[in-house]
Length: 222
Length: 222
Image 1: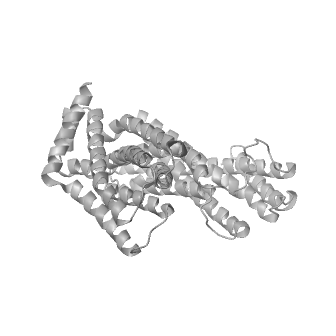
Image 2: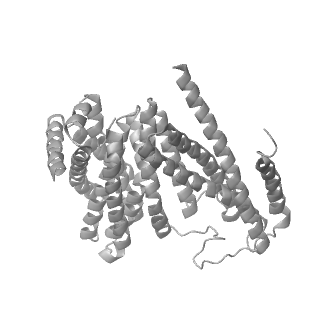
Image 3: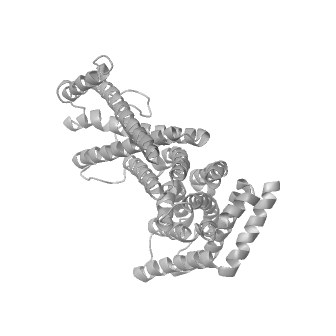
């Protein structure tokens, strides 16, 4: 329980820092809006099929996540606060705190971007319960992958480009099954139609999260 | 360089000549696929070696994180380099065959998708290695990445066949669990698999001892 408490303090610290600068939130939010506008503008008034709508949503979410979610570790290295953090807390607490922050950031992005996506592209959600479950599970998976890869790239050069390159192959299970399940949800499928995809999303999130907690210490400790 | 120590190298040379002759002269053309099926004697072993190197690289990475000895990192990177080479060769040979049979070089068949993901992971692995300057840090981060990438692979086995249907022939591993190959084809195929694996072992040995020598030399300079 001790490290959960510590993780909570790390989350609070990052939350307050973010609230002051709003660097990650601005980057991730404006990127998502720009992409969405570019897509909506270029297709004009026509209605897209669900085969195209659901990949579009996940492409926007994935690349927006790639612009902002690495900031949490890159900032610690750039402002040279990482070593202090290494001294005062356990690595598990650091990972949990940062992971939770990234999850909240991603969900905040979705709260803003999903209504815009639905409105601008004229999307009708057939089964909203399935739709939001997919989004939640997908965010869990994406934020776990992104947090671990962010920790890796914060110690490398060429951080920005490397983040998406390293995250993409690892996030593919989330993206493929997320896109598939979103399409089912948009077409009005029930939970039992989307169950295999939801199972994959859930199990992948659990596996990657567990693995991240185990491996994070190796990345974090020098 | 006495003959008795290197006998297996001469043996391998003769063996591969026999396999090449056998592939074109001894094995009969396959039913339905005709002479194009002869590519399987070279294409399948390449794909197998790409997978095997990936496995060796991941196992060496685990050893590296546990023991922190440079030799394991040398094994991991050498296996990954050879794996990348064979993955590219398997992709090219497969693509040429696909053009002949399916009339298109690339159409996202599940097998094409999975080899593409493998290529992406290898590419990301080397991108990460080139972006870190300090040796220990590079070895550590690359090892972690290799392990995460390896854990995601089983998910692709479940996901990809659900989304796309495969046209790729499965001569050895198929749902009925039967070997559908002509006995003469099977002899050449298994022989080729054996020959390629020995060849892989040979290349890996050369790469590892070269990398080791370079490591020792670099340390002497300091």
